[in-house]
Length: 181
Ligand SMILES: [Zn+2]
Image (cartoon, rainbow, N blue to C red; front, side, top):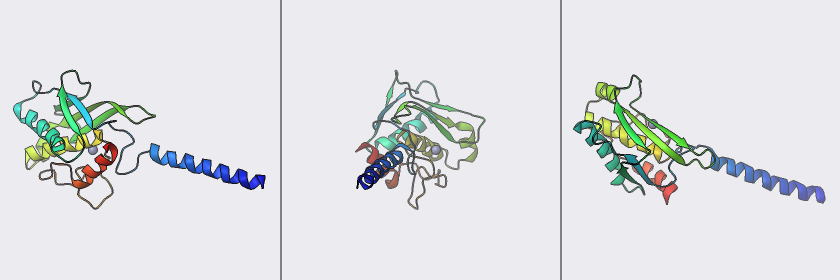
């Protein structure tokens, strides 16, 4: 009898460990890290870039702020987070680096880079393509992973039409809101 009880207790403990493992590690459509809240700020950039890039970044931010996602992106001169647009000698269109607490997964700082070189080379509609990139990169700040395994439309998909899709899609908004409800 004692042996059976021991077996039941140890099985429950094992299940609990397994459950916490699922919560801790990344699972599509999420990264294992992201902003604790939907309210994030980014360092002001208006004096750093020309009007074209300022409006492209503004528009990417508005795409989230005007969506039904429970998020708000604001600009602050004292923010640790930044957006940088430059002609990087890399193949990516955008890149988001996040520093995060390894136990909570909460991001403490992020930097978004947007590649003017590759975007200019590949865009048919420059403004849409660049905005699509900025919107996508902010998706990472809100935990969304690259290229989610879904048949639904997503701003995080590599196969999306960057010349046309510039806003987070219903799938994206739903996943973000599951984090910030
Ligand atoms: Zn990405």
